[in-house]
Image (cartoon, rainbow, N blue to C red):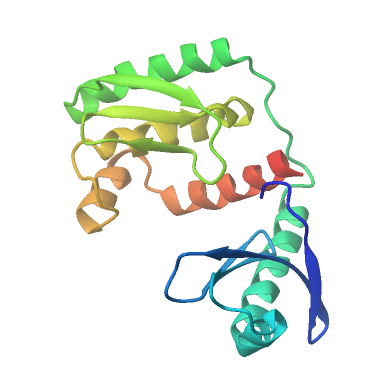
Length: 192
């Protein structure tokens, strides 16, 4: 999250960091990311902020426990993993190899590939067949780079994450759920 002034509040045995944004919205929004809360309140609202947080104590506590458990699990599972140290140029070369391979296998044509800093995603595919990939792919092992490229290229055929889409994914990556778990672990290492 961007540089903001955070306050803290205690929910059972967890101290939650939060910040408040006042906007032209009708309803209150609770956005929990990386163990921190962004509370979006209507501009006209001048009531006690902590009251609104405590209204969602149960939900917040459950989500925070899940977040910290996942952190501990990733810490344990990544103790023997290390990040690759590719340059962006090396990553682009590797991606091009996979794009050529998967264009033939999937019988699709990628319009354009671009690389950006992405905070919450590894990649995306537009309806124009433009693929955007995170620059952080340079830290991943080859098999996970291949998986992400294939995943985004499969979206040229099926845009949604539905059964039809996962049937395509399983043709090349039978263990795609394991790949997703590993990606979560590498994300933890990158952010660490």
